[in-house]
Image 1 (cartoon, rainbow, N blue to C red):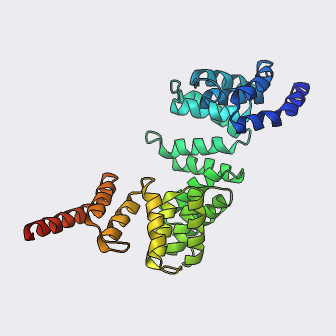
Image 2: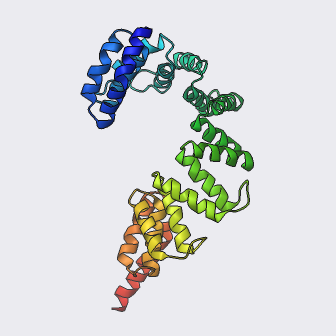
Image 3: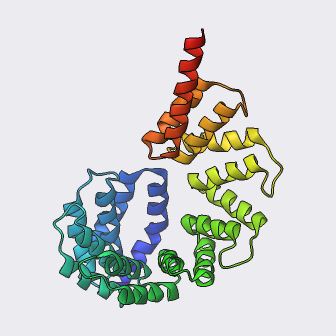
Amino acid sequence: MNRLQKKFDEIAEKAWALRKEGNYEEAIKLIMPFAEKGLPVAQHCIATFYYYGEGVTEDFNKASEWLQKAADQEFSESLSMLGHQNLYGVGIPKNISKAIDLLIRAVNKSNGYACYILGKHYQFDYAKCDYFRASGYYVMGINLDNKDCMRARADMHFSAKEFKEALSLYVKASELGCVKSTFNAATMFEKGLGFETDLKLAFLLYKSASEAGDFMALHNLGTFYYSGKYVEKDKKKAFNCYLKAANEGVALSQHCIGLMYLNGDICQDLDVSLAWFNRALERGCMDSEQYINEIKLIKNKNYIEH
């Protein structure tokens, strides 16, 4: 197997490059012979091609079969991925007892992601809710530098109003690339939870999160520009932030654009304002309903007067 692994290592870089380029078929051709010879890392790779439908038709059953081959050899990533698939029934029937067994085996192989999945299971399985056990798995994952475990444990601290502990873990997870944690840390610095209020740091963290694709962070940047909080007040920049977030479905941004058209911050247009408020209401922003009614009253009054 060591000789087979060495040969695989020689082609691995080329295979990853092909996959990154989207040339999945050629990547599969390189990897498949090693999978068929029983190399677990190659079997895991083939499983992921089937799981995500890359170069082949998406097939969760075939993915499961390849994951099982690698898991039988105690390959950590396959143990955790197959455990996840069984726990949630992703394309295969749920099998919670099998999932737990697989995930514990993965944890014993120091797999941080398996710690996260088990933590979530025990935290949110309302039939067998066990916060103590959930926390234990999160802590194990934190010790393995798993950012998801850091964020999940931080969420637990936050819910318990243990803000310093929460902020510390959000910052650590953010440094490892957890965008949600970056957003949460920004919110805490903005509101002074767990630390003194630091608007500069909050702004920079929102900016970082927005650049990584968090549209609620982009909305909050808009609020900074609109109110002149830390940065110079700039309603055009605020509008641009809101518009980008609104087009991604952020209801609060849609509501704020409605307000800007209602108040004439860019230009006053009741019809456009009404359209944005309606979109926000459809997305669950109940505050928009009041303004919808107000605009209708204004429009009816104008119609009667003319």
